[in-house]
Structure formats: structure tokens, C-alpha cells
Image (cartoon, rainbow, N blue to C red; front, side, top):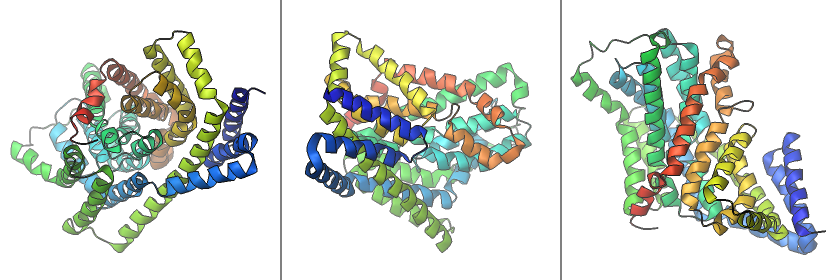
Length: 438
């Protein structure tokens, strides 16, 4: 049998296992190991399994994953997210849809210290939704702005998904992290502009919150609520950009800074420290196992020659690279409805990565596009993990259909953002290209 057919069978087996609700790590590892046994025999398969496990367990760059997570969970437990939202509220008071805009801004700030959409959605749902409903905001706008803007936390570094993507594709981790800043800011600005226009055209969506009593002195003093986030931002962006820190070293310094802030803000409690470490360990273990499983599947797919067959087919069809990337973006939109972002990335990259390399696609730019499209899929039905996180917080008070209806406008803005990022790659590549070292 043609080896490429074996690869197709393995990929179909992977999809079937996922459809049967088998954990993604096992769903990738089983066809991967069986495929390795078919191509290499028992001893060869065993050698690949042991070598790939050892490689990822000892990869220095992977150290950034638990450190970024620890920094984020510690910052959240130190109350920095609540303070950021309070500051954003004061600065957006008086603007049409100001509280909803504040939610988007705070989520972007949250992304500068967390790097995961799920805790961002949970935290902002608890903080922002009750406040918006108290001021008689439309329910769909309130919950939609939280569910959608939580995805920005994944695009703005530190981002666990970016770290794993950089490890798997072997691109510079520092450049990959820097590539997310401007697209993340662009996403927040487009969200805020859309909210302002909608509320201006339909004031009933968000009754005006008067800013008459807020002085510029109060606005300036409100900035003290984001000083902690600003410190983390400067450590990460400044250290990586100047080459003074590697991305992993910046993660370590950031984690230490987050603990120092717990003392400065007088929020230090051993229970919070324990919670931060346990949450970090849980996500780190999951990420490491998925990396190993995906690596085994990737080796099997490479041995089958399926990526090369796909690349040759695309080249022979004379398909423009832009059209191919649009097709991939649509694919990720569909898969994002069914899978969380990290498993989706690790399932598809073994096949797409060799093709992207053959087509000379910039992998850092593609990584930004992938993350943005994957997160769009993460807020659309039927999976919509951010939607269900918000639903878990609001309970039965707001129907799930209302949340999905609320994210419609934000999804449209995400498509606009992706189109801009595709049309102007330098938005993603400008900061990485200025980086002092690779």
C-alpha cells in the first residue's frame, strides 16, 4: 500500500478517536505509535517514542510554559485583573458602550500577564458582567464582549499557545511572542470601535454612564491600578526586545515579579500561592503530554510522505499562496468549533508545516493568523469554549443562545482583523524584525 494512504488512514483514525471523546493526547499517540510500528518495526517505534518523550521533557524553551502560567495565575490572585478593569472603567466612562469597551481593554491587559483565554473569560465574567447588567446594558452585548475579548488574552504575550507553537515549528520563541503585541492591540481597538459605533446607532444597547463627575486627576490616579501589569509588560517586552532576556528568562523574572507584587499589594496568602502552583502544574502536565503525543503523530505522518504529497499537489495545481492560507483559515475556523486551540494546532501542524515550509510562508506571521482564527473558532458553536466558561459563571440567568448571539458582531470584527493581518504582514513582523537578537 502507498505510504501516503497509511498516513490518511492514521489521520482519519485520529479524527474518529476525537469524535469518540478520547483524550486528544491518546487520540494522537495511538495512531502515531501504530504507524511508527508499521514503518519502523517494534524496536524503531520504541526508539522514536523514548527519544521524542525525552526531547520535549528536556526542551529548555518549554520551561517558559509553567513560568508564564505561574506568573499569570499569581497576578490574577494578587488582584491585578480587578484593578485593571477598575482603571479601564474610569477612562472609558462617558464613551458609548464604555463599560463594554473597558472589558475589552481589561482583557487585553489581562493577556499581558496571563496568556490563556479560559481563565481570562472566567475572571472577566465575574468582574464585568454584573457591572454592565447593573447599568442596564443589553445582555447579549455584556456577555458577548466578555466571551469574545477573552480570546485576546491568547494573542497578547505571554501566550502558552505561542510557546508551544514556537517549540513545534522551531521558530524563535522571542520573535513569536513579540509578533502578538500589535495584532492584539489591533483586535482590542477594532472591538472598541465596533462597540462605540453600535451603541451610537442604538443607544438602548448601553445606557450612558455619566463621566461629568470624573476629573482628570481621578483618571491619572486610576492608572495606579495597572502599575503591576505595566511592570510585567515592561519586563517581557523590554527584556525580550532588547535581547537582555531570552523569552524563557523573561518568564522566570515575570513569575518572580508577580510574587513580589503579592507582597506589595498585601494580597499574599499561602492558599493563593498553593492555588497558583496547582493550576500551573495541571495545565503544564496537560501541555507536555499533548506535545509528546503530537510529536509521535508528526513523525508517523512525515514517514508516510503525506505532507509532501499535499505540497506537490498544491504546487502542481498552481494554487496561489494567499488562496491556500485563506483555505487554512477557514479550516481552522471549522476545527475551532470542535477542538480547543492547542489540540487543534498539534493535530494539524504535522501535515501543514512541511507544506508551509515548501511554499516559503513566514511561520511567525502564519502563527499569528493561526492563533487568531483558532480563537474565532473557540467562540463559535457548537464548541465555543469561552462561551461555555462565561455560561458557567452566569448560570441560568442568561441563556446560552443569548451569549452566542452576542458574539456575532465580535466574530465579524475578527474576520476583519484577520483580513488586515493577511494584507499587511508587517503588523505581525515589525517588532520581531526589530528584535536585537534572534
